[in-house]
Image (cartoon, helix red, strand yellow):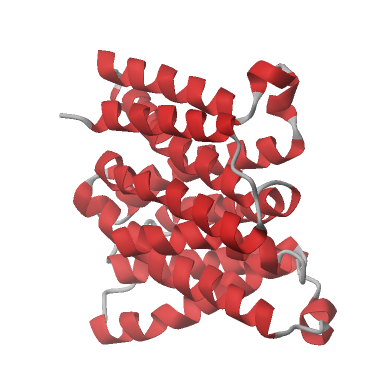
Length: 276
């Protein structure tokens, strides 16, 4: 799980770079196409029973969320700072996950309320709301990053439920397949075939697809039902620091004081929520 988080942290920088070459929909299609192909051998080796028609709904829901998340992910990193997005998204989504679980279970503890309030406060600082005003929340890049946080929280829970009934390898592979299918109506095939792609693109796309998704996301999806959604989310602790360091090194992004302070507050919030 820790290595998976490393791949996620680096992916924010990779995503901003590959966004210079292809449309967001083309990137989503290619990312999930490679993810699907890379997991087929694991499915063939394990030979799990195929899903029933009744179980398909548990794959369709996270696939739709995957699609929405990835469009927002590529658009957000293209328009804004990769390091800022990583810190905002990866500190808010564990808190959103816990709140959604609390709503489903119709119970929320005092520490969850404290953690959520602190996390929201940290998120507002990251978005620089206290300097720019609440108009900063509807800033384009912040909107996409907030969409990422919410959809990932929903996806974490839907994955946890789905894998209780479906073999994890088959579940992950089919999620990637359906997300790829969802992206097909939006792709520009000519751009994919005739774009002048160089080694810079291929190296970064390898890490954002095979590294962060085929390995990182698959490990996260596989581990979520084993650890539980809340405990799985706590591993995201390491992602903001990795993302901030790599975006500074490769993109020369300056991580401002408000991003550091807000990120630390949000991390403390995640710790409070997950502390036994």
